[in-house]
Amino acid sequence: MQYRRLGNSGVNVSALGLGTNAFGTRASEEASINIIHQCLDFGINFIDTANIYTGTESERIIGIALEGRRHEAVLATKAGLPRGQGPNARGSSRYHLMQELESSLKRLRTDYVDLYQIHTFDPNTPLEETLRTLDDMVRSGKVRYIGASNYAAWELMKAIGISEKLGLNRFVSMQTSYSLADRAPEQEMVPLCLDQGVGIIPYFPLAGGILTGKYTSADNVPTGSRADADPNFKRFLQPDKLALGDQVVQLAAELNCTPGALSLAWLMRKPAVSTVIVGATRVEQLEENFKSVSLELEDAVMDKLDRLSDASRYGAPFAVYRLSK
Image (cartoon, rainbow, N blue to C red; front, side):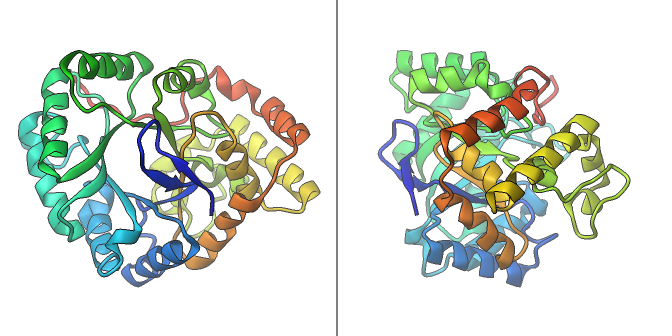
């Protein structure tokens, strides 16, 4: 396994990480536990979850799976997206974050998380309140490092500036949609993260499965796929994205590898990327994704993938999750 520093922090994370938003739904509890154990056996140490994944089931299952092996994982979770209907059941206020951290720790069966991430920018809470709260969490020992997710570049830079001014712990990572099908971060977010020493953690690195070639049209989705389990996902199955997926499939066939491994390997070589989180619903899927770590891409292949996906640098982000004002 390859390991990289998470931004300018001192912690090392595996180049391939595990995303767990299917645990408890498309992946049963037993399958999820087996996947986590196989990850650790492979040397994959970065495990990413959130307090809202599968109605908190993801965190609960991870807590069970890591019993006796907690020290092998760099465990990351998030808070900030809606957890209920109450007036304080969302956002990054001190009130909400303190409450959610304690609940996550109980479900995860641990007394600390390695990376605590704000799931999205909160327009209704002063950044200073959020950052002071996160700093208190780090000082308490319940959080080791802090990160952001779904921030715009200006929002991330503002947060870093406030942390620097006030002498607070600052964000070491930024989680954003980033893939061959979504290169929008390269316009502003990647240069910012390189300049400020923030590690990028791409989500949707396979564009929800589009880059594996599993989808041929929005009307023909495989049983058990994300689009099958969540019909709302079909909004991502746009003709240009499906065409890109087909081109990646063809190139992968020429290189004698899978399109998924090819797409992940391309992303791992991109500047500022610390770890690429990809989900799995069965161990065989994880084993296939793991091949990306050892897949060496020549510069000519990287250039060709860059050309094939160039249009995605200028379009709207593939996915972004925001709170309304």
